[in-house]
Length: 201
Figure (cartoon, rainbow, N blue to C red):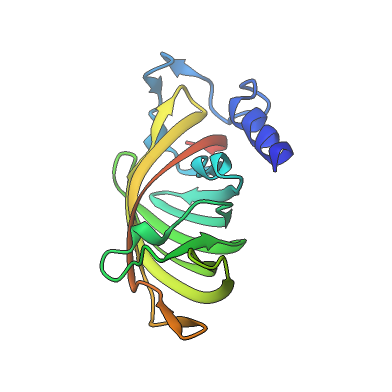
């Protein structure tokens, strides 16, 4: 996973100009002209980079057309415990880890780089009973929505903080008589780092 993180870091922080834009660079570094939210089309790669700190990874590829944005992502949370994100019936007796899972996102820029979006993620969670160390997998199709803002640093690199709400059906796992019930709702802050590979104005 360290190799994947290195590749993503080089891609995000790579020298500008590797992927040429169709318009000449104008304005200043902090206020380019045209503005980044004026792009008619764009291709971006991004990562929920905190996943790397827990031994996991996340990579996403997005395409923007006018104000619409489509993204595909793949996540593995490593040792990141998602159980505390549950808003009601999360349990301190269990830990919940993201195993490798895909996601599909559809968004719309409502104002400048402010994006609202819906998504579906086909999660596989590894549930660990803290007292015994026993583990079981639960498969969950999570639906939800999010809101976030792209803060561009120059014409290519951006940070995108936001918040997600995840909704899922009832599901459970039995650990020798002790039943784990997965929370129906998760609420979680997110932050992604990304790189705009190409754009057209």
